[in-house]
Image (cartoon, rainbow, N blue to C red; front, side, top):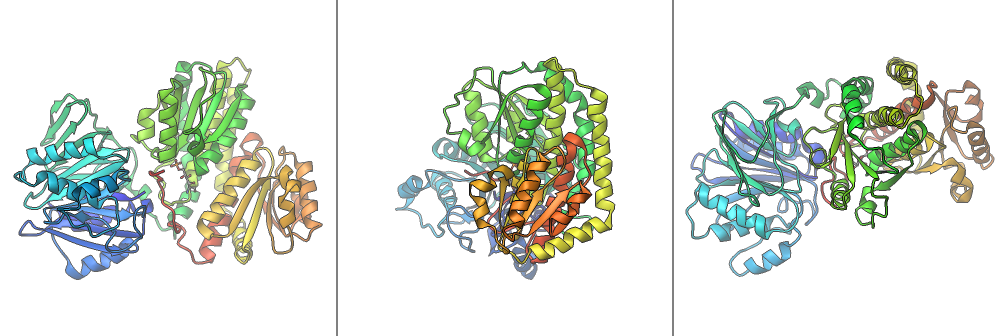
Length: 617
Ligand code: M6R
């Protein structure tokens, strides 16, 4: 939640930073702002409520130039979205400006201590940090050494989460930073450096990155990067491309992502592009994980229980993972929402393996649950899409998905690649557990899957059919998705997709639960999407469909069985591919949500009230 960017170099920081900020807009989009140093090295701030384009309009009018700027795009926590609450925030004397991603938990206490000498103008928690630094720099000269001292004090005094970029009056081409529990990384360029919440911001300029860890503070100039760990006193210094000091043991990583992956590439929305990227994302994931998985499973001890934990779409992937692991590995599994697990008593066997799934690798609840599990001595495995993300660095083991950057708030290709990763993991764990599994047939199906997905997407009749159903679906206020076995988690995921981008109330249900309540809702104004593919207790599901029809409910049937056409009002034909059918079924569900939201004219990639990475609790 919230995206921050900092740039210092020889280019116009305002334009470079603004473009970088746009690539982070998925992290929050209720207001945005920039602070920069003008020719006289004074701080100037431009902010605007609304999307980044509003900020851009203001910038265009002034057309400022600077070599150093910090930016913010906001997802409001404290204080409503407004120009005043938008970041950057400044101190009373305007000696500094800062942008912040995270939540300052003890901001009231800090404010109370400062209130006699400082004037607060916003309702945010962030503003107290600007005044805190001002107060602690009061009698000091504005130079690096003193600023680092004040930053150290800030880290020691402030409770909560923060990624901070800070600029100071008169300190040209220098950006200070601090991080705890919110992502922040440094992009290393040639005679220019970047700070950002994630790497997509600076991908067009550099793929060389340093991920910052908790309690790290420091500064960068176009030629220099200095990092200091507040707790250990260890340091890192890079000057003119050379590492001068590295007691911190920081690594410079190379991001394998391509800049074109973070662009729309001719598609109307990122979501549509990402749906269409799924065959490639699955292929990359399958091939990319092959060796890693063998090695990973070799190092893992077979547990007596697997505890999956995740949020949202990633949680739905874990429900399918549970089926795979129980079926192919013969290992019992449970799935817990990370937001629940983190506060639970962890009453699990000592040898339980915890698998945390997160596209971003930054979700606050998932990270907190992971930390709790580790604290209690459990082994942890992270399945994540983002190299160097906090979850990937903190888990004992990591398995990356190779979906490439996922920009749309609604997760699509990340889900498919997570499910495929679990399918592969289940095979290797099964082998280790002594099950007689046929590698060739298990994995050759993956290539059939990829081909079938490509065929589905290339068939314009499929797309036309789903568009027509979407148009019809858009006129309803409520809808229900039902399915059994693999199709139950898919029902949950299909419903989540529809509600988050089209704002139509949608619920996913295990079809067998219909009679225990939801059937009361059914009438001619309540459409049901029935996921009715073979092997998912189809005969039972047919019974559920009959019961809905008997109550005048309208039904969209998604099935591989042509003869089910007559059962419903609409029909979506999918292929059947045994245990991988769920990865074929997800495609029309994602498209249905996409076209419905687009037909209703909503901002598909940036739905209201949401943000891509939920880095606050
Ligand atoms: O990055 P994560 O996978 O940890 O994110 C988890 C959820 O926030 C995410 O899946 C969310 O539910 C999506 N908006 C769903 O499309």
